[in-house]
Length: 277
Image 1: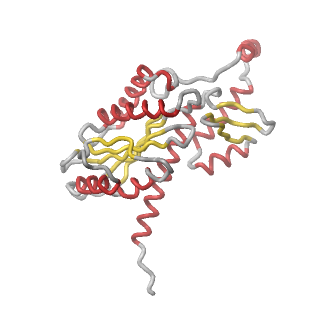
Image 2: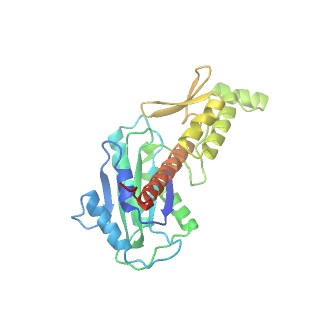
């Protein structure tokens, strides 16, 4: 499970709400500290806007947060069970990360890694002060949520991303014996290391696919399983390579960046003067 956060300096509540609800079938999965009758996207935007209006203007002050909780690809567990678990995990996350702030969550289940987008206010309800969360405090929450997920929802997978243990490369008995005999990294280990570097360095989806192609590799998806195919047609599931978390980390990073670019494009469109008719 990956938890990513990105702050925004402008109160682009309407744009982010539209972005989160863009995929077909996406709907409001949970609300946090919002009035019971707040049911429509317009209602939600109004509540966030009114609450933000209480804050004094401040240079570089955060107006809101866009965050993502993403599950690792899991082809074995029914999608409805993953969605139900993600709702519970996200609700607990908000209780710890934003106990008095406004928040709304939308689940995207059309990808291999089911994930939830969260829009979180920068101030608590009816507060004139911004809530400041230190990086180390956020890291503590990430670790606590990972422990909670592992203890209460082990069926979602056993990968560790924030705690001591980490997801590892799965080796066959033959591969283990070969490494013990030769002392050299296997082809699969070398491949995993190369792909991990690509996932870490890529700044968007296009760059990711381009970097993989340069190495003769192609990212493929079969159902909810994601893997790598070599030029020779050999296929490896990312979970087998120990790269399940690295993949959803990159995917979450791309989504946050895309939503940010969409927000900037919307702002530029509003700032541009209309052409004379």
